[in-house]
Length: 83
Image (cartoon, rainbow, N blue to C red; front, side, top):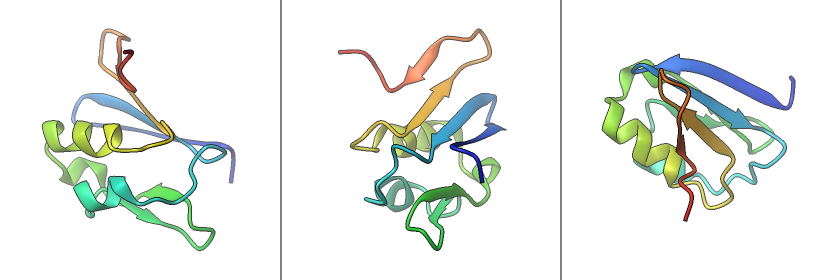
């Protein structure tokens, strides 16, 4: 598997950076139907379309190492948010 996995869900482009993910699982706590940890303990998509947009954004933003990035349809990065 490559270093990135990307999907379009809820009108958002969501990317998991597998090289950054350390398996805290905060995304899974927020949206277990959208994410899971694979055999290597790295986050992967399950069914992100099953998660409503606001909760999907919260799940992605919950990552403490910013391994999940999200962009809207205009190409603006929503997650991680800049301080």
